[in-house]
Length: 551
View 1: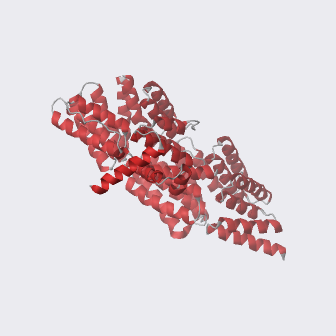
View 2: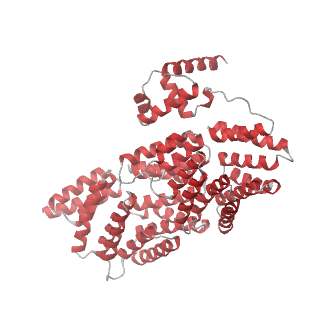
View 3: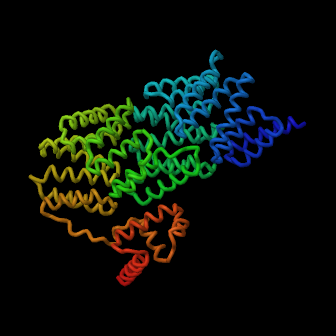
């Protein structure tokens, strides 16, 4: 009788997992464990603990489940669980442990007939692959096995991994087709495992953002966010907010991007199940554009060695007038990018700027030619736009202003179509320099348009560059007064609350940000308004509101 109760509790736990009811599932599995600690009960308990933010306990439970499955001769389940543990270690920054558990998964199915276990091993081998070609090979094998075994979760998982690798390799159309096929199957209720659905979501959104598919990315970010909230999955929601922030930064919605990234970093900090590998570098890049270099340095301290961190750190070094250091960092990132078109293009674009600042024209031309080659071989519009901009910059640096104008116009059109205001305005400055001698009126118009956009975005360094160009053209933009108009939307919110007499802790609670972040906002507000304390800032806010209401 007790054994039946334990089996019933275990079955109930798996049903609750499918519904995303993590705490209830944990209770059911604990009940089952009290009766008989079977591998299935340990497996389910580990799953529930992980989604409750208890990563170490979850890994430990599933490691014991693995041993139980091996003893019972259930090699498919043993391989599946070992693959999960491998990935859990990978995303928590423990690559050696991840490789060890992949080896355990491989060992579990060694000599067994081809079945679902080999399929799970293949999909994890795809995620560990050193090249995209190898990744695609393993993902395809996993898909074949999944279809032979009728393993829908595995098939959708493998489809999404393959689709993302195809996009990264520059085969946008093929990759997006696979990703959307995976999503269609996942969202139609063909999967039992919430983790599979989350993986399909993440791969699609990340592929969209990396390829500059902003509209498609924004659409799916909303879907992913809603799903993550529905099943109460903070790590997935954090990943979604980071991807969404990429869209917001690119399309010029910087205050919203700040909020999304701060939310992601808070969620990652609370849930060790997925350490923050991308939101920190993403926020650092935004801070660099805003001219807040000190904050960027803090965000990149103790960074991981990946392309996102190397790119962000290189951009910081360029801003700090250390282009040679920046170039070395980018070259290191490129050495690890292998056949990844998207990552390579992301690193080559700033490398052009770094080499230009070093005065290395031949190196710049090689980097720009490589970028043009990626654009020709792929159908990724963002890569094409970056290639045109790099070409224009090379011509300008070589003293060929006339030849720079056409690629600059092409880049301007491309970034405009992608709805990327910061990048569009950067191109305007290049175009202005290219036509300054023959069409000074057009050059001034482009520089003024760039200046206005940078001012609206709060891009202080780029704003200074455009102001300098306007002065060179004999059309200075005018004094930059430190006024309330320079505050970002978030800073204005903080100022309004500060004017109500709120402390940093109360402001943080009201805006759902950390107290440290609230303190940073207050410090920047005092600096921008040119006041020395909170009382003077509050008085300034009151005066400004009074003037506004009268007007």
